[in-house]
Structures are given as C-alpha cells and as structure tokens.
Image (cartoon, rainbow, N blue to C red; front, side, top):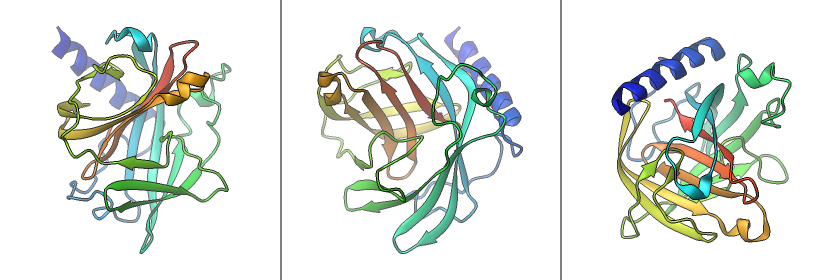
Length: 229
C-alpha cells in the first residue's frame, strides 16, 4: 500500500511542477559528481516542492502534505568564489493566488553564492543578512558518518525529540524516485529553547540539499522543501 501511495504522490507532485514551471519536472540536469557544485553549469535548475507538516515532536510519519508550490534554484554564474544561485517561487505556485499567507516570502528572489570549503557547504547572501527560501542556516557541515545513523520518516527523522543540535547521517533514502546512498542530517533545534524555530537539513556533498524544514515549538508544525530534481 505504501508503495502505491508513494507512486501516486510522485505523479501528483510532477503534475504540480508542470503547472508551476513551464519546463516541467523532466528538465535535464547533469549527473551528480563528487562535488555537486563542480558539476553545475550556468542555467542549471534545481526544483523543490513545498510541504506542510504537523506534530513534529510526535514522530508520526503521515502528518504532512505537499501544497502545489515549487521553488526553483537557478545557477546564474560560476566564479572562483563559487556558484551564484537565485532562489524564487514559480509564478504558477498555489501560494501566489492563495489569500492565506502561509508562506510570507513568496514574492522575494534571493541570490546567494554557494561554495564548498573543506568539510562544509557555505551559502553567502548578497544581502546584509543571510536570506534564503531553502536554507535555515548559511553553513552545513558534512557528516563523517561516524555519528548516529537515523531514518528519514515522513517529514522528520527517527531521532528522538530534542531541543539541542545534532550532526547525524542517513543511508538508503529515496525521494521522488531518486535514490541517495548516504546523506548528512543536521538538526538545529537549540533555538527552540527560547521559542524560536528549529530546523532540519538533509544534504550531501555530491547531491547538494535534498530537504530542508523549519518548525515551531508552540505549534509543533512547520514547512519544508523536498527536492524534486
């Protein structure tokens, strides 16, 4: 039953992507290299589908849904400093016509420089302060895979609820038909101790960012971006 549901969900999201982006879900991308930034070319696009989740601390895998909104990251320039990438919501996304303001940055386009240095991915904003639709933090350290392994379950992980930070990893994960052998998982929940948002980011050096999510302590609900491709 779960396999049938997953297949149906993939079809629904790809139809949504076709509606939201004139190029659709099937636009070609270069195969991942050992460093995804090295494999990027000007004009390449990465697409993400917005999800809304509930009951973060409960660990239930079913309390989330996709909204029909698409985020596009486009490579504008490749320089010695890294890849200059814009982040924008596609014009056909549901949030553009929805009177309910469930995602308040819908009209903004962010331009950031992505680079890999030593053991981390750095994202440097062109603005005075870091700003991104996709990422809650400007630095992501790659796991060395000696930390605790967790499963990615629904819109969260199997890691026990905690209001602390944790560097973890996951293996053998499939999202929208794309398989990832190993992924770094960074949980940044320390801000929840003072009622700010916590966040989880799933990524790797060869695939880039696969998922990001943010959630609040008071509501235990949140939103996230899942990579379509």
